[in-house]
Length: 286
Image 1 (cartoon, helix red, strand yellow):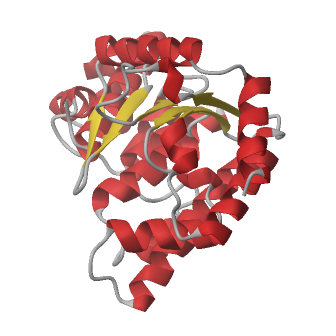
Image 2 (cartoon, one colour):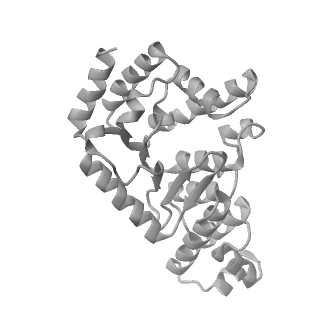
């Protein structure tokens, strides 16, 4: 169990080690190619030390890695800049966002798929501005209006991943409590339910409702997110949100356990069609 930066270092190191092996190089040979001492390559591969994006670029060039998406992802894991040295959009909010939230956004921005269980609120990627404001105001005590505005802007900016090329694939299981909790008042909640109905029609979004009649379930104790990445061997990660921090689970056994849990929740949830009808019925009943 690790915090985000440590997870990113370990995953980046494991991927670079695999790429070096694929290139048929020892760590000493790789070090000589880029003009380093062998111990630096070893520290990077074990996640024992941080690594600059420029160092990752040097290794990827030495290993003849040409896959643009893979290069971008590994550069992202190395730090804040993309392959061209440009800052990502969330760096404008560095003074507002805690490091764990920035790590979450960076993973979300590069993931190809996201599976999430939500037990209390609508997933951030599907929230309306008014709902996002109400949730943020309730969740973070003592916010002034400027900081509240900035956090809502970030929440809405994150939603661009659903409109990317290709878009993030989002699969969400929503506990019925998410739909019945009246966040922000009747009008705001009605619009949020309408937004969910609209989102459910998008090809990249799959929503399932876990009804109260399903009884106790494996996800009662904690919502979670599973990020998956395309064209990589071992970068999937589970994120657990707590009140003041996030925890990242990176071990293969942990990812597999949460994947099985998600499959179980999906089995006990309503079908996609019945879930859409359930959400539409709640909206019409308001």
